[in-house]
Image (cartoon, rainbow, N blue to C red; front, side, top):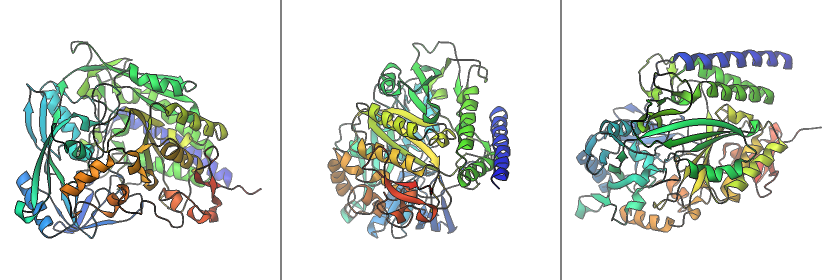
Length: 588
């Protein structure tokens, strides 16, 4: 039987690699992701999900109704009516990319979608500013700014986010320079519509500029202050960048990580721990826009992908998990990283092909991508890789930032775990390793509290919540080391439930945020059980039940939180003894 499985695996691995190669070389037309809001009748009796198609606790989030305002006047009217009727409200974006339940209303409440609040309202070339409605996407902002020879210098790498959603969760690019990598640091003005009493017509529009004390609450708000209507961004003159990728071994990663971001303005680092390799992104602005080069970064992971490729890739990994085929994962992981390196991760030089480093191009062509959104293919033959309508990747995304001053010690701890289990993290290479981006101290009350490195770890999730992963305990221990031993701050728009355990206590300005929240929404109409739990106002971030630790819903405290029927038991960490992880007990 094992020999049969082994032969199947070899065939699947070979076919998967060929499919990936063909889609990279030839390209395909994509199907944009579905609307995360689905209703049974005339925008009523609705459900909402995230871009993965499932929340961390796998619950179904219901709303009695969704409304799609097209103007600020309509938005005010909707908020006023909800406020008058004491109706629970949540804001939803076009693609709902936040993994936690930030857009999920309590009590079958009302959803307000910003999908149609999608206009660029003003471009001020003299002051280098742009005002947009909250549903405008990052791609539209980047393109419109470039049309007027301006740039938003730092952004997330995926352009399918809306400005309202991305600033509300603190989304960022990577830099230690200037204003920092978080988009909210470039916000100079926010108009936000919040509930009010009858004397104000049940809704109030608040204009928050840089001199307003509440702007730093609204910059990262988690959607609990009301609905952002408009955002004004401070831009810069358009510039060019020069990008080179360099691969080295990870022997000096701890020290190099501290200095690398200070040397290069748009630096990031990708780590392949099981291969003991590191990919350094040497990325700087050039002195003149007249520097030769019209390069483009069309990231491979954000391009259209044949649905058959995604299905085969997922099927292969499921079989590897089921047969404990660690070697297969290591082979496939190395093939994935070598293939990506061979085609320069989606970079191209002046004629649309890659001829060598450095790649020089305008900031708007380098900073962000997402061409899987471009074209409509009703047959679902292609898709963005995370599209839940097909049997493709199904993952966890753990993301936390560790202060630059102590990040070296976290790296050392991960290396110790790899020494104990050299193949344990091969599966991360299937998702191109651990991405490390630089973030800076933020003025926002719920922003980063000091300069740090954000670790983004994507890994396999079983369709069965009670089925453990290969080396379940290793990633659980890394997660707990980062979050608790080194006090890592969670990315508000990512993570499993345990990422938010005690999180609010790590923010030294949290009380200021909570005071503004109480002032803006005293009846808690824009709050939910989840946001109250995350903000420390209510118990319940963790969910205790059988198998809860496998899903990151809890930290195990007894064996039933793991999977004792499959020989996974709750045990202390291997190097961090305060950790509690689900470990496979091999019978002798």
